[in-house]
Image (cartoon, rainbow, N blue to C red; front, side, top):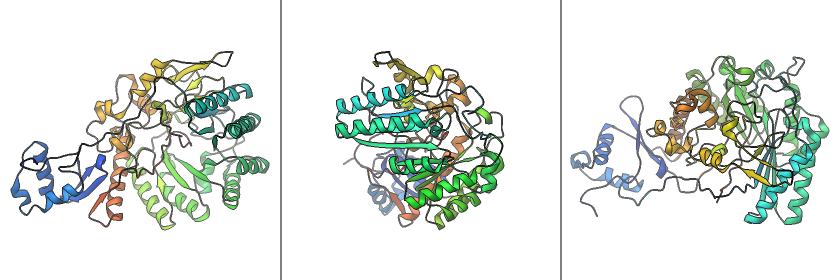
Length: 473
Ligand code: SF4
Ligand code: SF4
């Protein structure tokens, strides 16, 4: 036993008002609210100095030991594990750039350019590949996500064909198949029935109050789409179908966010609601930013209203239940196929014209169906973990944020290094809220989560997709 207590974790002090501080040890999933004396006591220990006068009866030391902040064993930093090869068992298909809506803020500007749709042959090649990998790796499962840069149900023949092929192979080989779609939920009742019968879940773009939704989520002839979306949500609820809602918040709709959340929570039963400020790319490039203090205030109000209905609103990069050194699949070998069959690591990048195509597009299959991946590109993407980014080193949110969206970071900061984005302030404020909520839920004195209590998803903030996160060992 050393002569005095020793700090045994990475620790952050987050100031609150009136001389109170959150003491936060993310890697121990521990936090409490303390005063300046405790802060000084810990600051001394960090420098290797023990001031016994700051803990005369030893109770602070005992308390900190219980939280594994002092005198505990070595702590483990989260670290994704990668293999030397690329054998994914999860597949995202960007089925088409066609869309039946013309949302003002569409990141993909769907409908503005020529339509590119995936052939069935391309989709089946991707399915065959993940099935082979699942058998080789003995994972026992495969996952398929249908996605845009347009509305996936607009390429219905390929969506259903890819699913049916995957179902046949999964049954033949005893694999569990999980299939999701992102969607604007504007489709026929026949399509709705098929989705309910065949898919395991959907992520639906819906902005809440009809007047908010219909301002931005409009059809090609300028009509609002809320009636049709709410019809789908009602049918999903009647069928007990699992779905989440993805809300995009533009600057002009921030003030309505709490009412929009209340509207959703009082009428529908989504498994989760994710609210994110609109990303200023595609059709929304140059629009006013919603990554503001007003968004944070509206999000807080929305959350407290949701709570009264037993619901929760999430923000992709604020997730105290998760410890990770990566934000999303883009830096962890995500395998998505563009309409022409090129492998992409990012939900934003579905064609060569994207300014970041050289970074995120990383492979193709040849005419015999043999896949060739640029492993140097994958290595480069994998290297973008939060622990390797200088700017994030002192940020208390780093092990839960994971460095946020790489595509966004590159768009905002360029290729010369990350220097923070407006999202960082949102992430830190909402993470701080979560820490305080966990302390309150744990009785008001301290929070000490147990290892393995990760419960938050890994969501792309730029599109309505929950990512499938697999361990690439
Ligand atoms: S600095 Fe920004 S991106 Fe980095 S960990 Fe903190 S909130 Fe996330
Ligand atoms: S979070 Fe960003 S980097 Fe990750 S998939 Fe989405 S857009 Fe791409």
